[in-house]
Length: 250
Image (cartoon, rainbow, N blue to C red; front, side, top):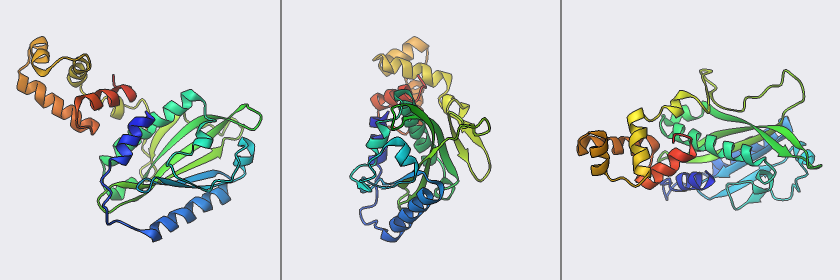
């Protein structure tokens, strides 16, 4: 799933002339403010430059992080991610892929209204798993619509029955609308017929073979193929199968 995310994030056009130092500096200030006020770890990632800026709150001591690298040449904070439970890490990547797909389907002004919240198990300094709330917000887009600045926040979940965090949801902070990762908006993004055709594509069937098997015209099959590509934001059948498998659609 991380490979799929890399493909999607890095294939954005990013206008070559786009350069907004002031917005990047503002993003760094926001990240530092969160780390200071919430004692969390905040990671601001510049997807165009493929760099991240890390601010450490008190939770970093609990996790035993070195707190030396405040700037890294990657959008992935691997020192921290290496401590995440493997199952939770894959869940995180899958949700982030779905989140990216969602934001690409809405207007630029609406993107700031959405955030992804995930519950993660992360190893602490003693090697034991503690619960952490991870939040992902996209706080900046380039002029061509490419998603540019991503902000990740890692907060400690306190051991109290009223501090319950969902396993993984996308929330519209303006309307209050909540979508969990099994929500129909994702699981039903493809129709049953489209899933059937994609399953046959996955097994190497060509359009003519699919048409014969399903008693459809080849034009109908090709129209379904194009709809699948459009809905999954892909350009070919191989990528469509990888995306569908990675996001649980197949």
